[in-house]
Structures are given as structure tokens and as C-alpha cells.
Image (cartoon, rainbow, N blue to C red; front, side, top):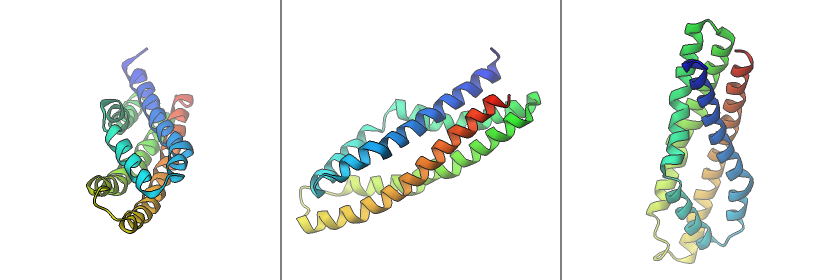
Length: 162
């Protein structure tokens, strides 16, 4: 296998991992957390948000952002224009629909939640905070989930069109 092929396969793998993470989270974790009382919901969400900040997540999340355009450029350079166009679309969708949505919407909400003190909040303030947080976070998460799954599909198509 050539280096461009390895890079393209790595890009597909990493986007698949991100799509799987977001999809699995949307199918199970959000629904499970949603069944919890307000204080437990927020406490569990704080714990998950802190736990996901790890090298495994960053490797796939940032690696996709880097490897997709590199694979695109290498495909163009090699004359694989159909594959390159799919990788270009995947790169742009990942940048806007996954990376920027996460950075501009989900991360600020995560940071807001991290600063929220569950020990000093009243039941009313905890409930109000949850309503504000949960609605926005879930909406943005669904957008990035859809974008990450579509990115994975586009990157898979680039392999078929190679």
C-alpha cells in the first residue's frame, strides 16, 4: 500500500470513529441521561464532558480534521479526481458541521455546565439551567451527528471511487 492510500484509509477510519461516537451518544447516552432527575442529569453530564477530554477522542476528532484534506490533496495530485471531490466534500462538511459546531456550540455549553455549581444550586436554578443547557446542546449535537455520519459516508465513497 502506498502512503496516500494509508492516509485515505486512516481518514475514513477516524471519521467513522467520530461518527460512531456521536451516533452512539445520540442513540443511548442522551436518552439515558434524559431520564435522570435534574441534578443527577447535570452531574452525570459534567462527568462525561470531563472524561471525553482524552487522547483517544482528540486523535480521532482532530485527526479527521487533518487527514481528510491531506487525503483530498493527495488524491488530486495523483489524478484521482472523483475520490478527491468526495474527500473535499467530506473535509468541508467535517470542518463546518462537526468541528465548528462542536467548537462554537457544544464546547461553550460544556464549559458553562462545568462552571455550574450543583452543590450551591437550588432545585429551581438547577431545573432552569438543565432546560437551557439540554435543549441547545442536544440540538447542536444532532447537527454534528448528522454531519459526521454524512462525512463518513462521503469518505467511504472516496474509497469506492479511487
